[in-house]
Length: 274
Image (tube, rainbow, N blue to C red; front, top):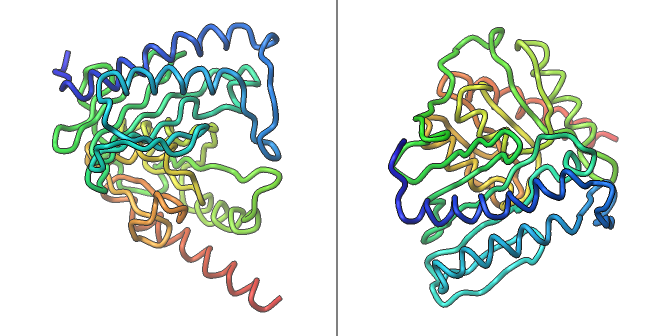
């Protein structure tokens, strides 16, 4: 079993405690009181309970740290160097449909840089952890990004925009470009787990347009510490600012980036001529 730093012990402890409630609620879906939070974007009592549990655990261990939370927004802290980024239930729609593919995502941002990340899949009991400079681990075992180089042997993951979101046409262009040259594209509905799977070498890469920082932050740390590359969809570092994300191994990142940026340029040209 790999050594966990005090920081990662705090983060994994918070994830495990919140997971117990999520598993209980997942087994009693018919009793959940569900409300809508925008079109096709659901929020349940399970989200809020998990977030409250995580925040209590984190604040008990690091009371001065601030936080950015999916449900509650910004929580100020006296320590302005450290901030938690928390998605208590990444894959809420899967959860509410009884699909056992969702995760808890907790990251720490230190002095404006992502420093540590934890992604936990309660159903599979898979705990992904990473800390800057310390490598990435799955259930105590060191993980690395895939070593595949050929696109026609590579599988990529993505997220599909649903009703109420923009960029449907852009996504279709991106998908068509990637489908043509690769072994396949998967869509499972949890960006945190998609990034964790890239870190573990299960996918060669992942891209998605315009995600929120709390769902991305921990996975970005995992991919970087597993030897992969993470950029926004223009090759920059605007992932946490809504500029999309593209994560891949060392050999497939550049060709995947070329495909999605070419699709974006083509869509922009079509839009400007309309």
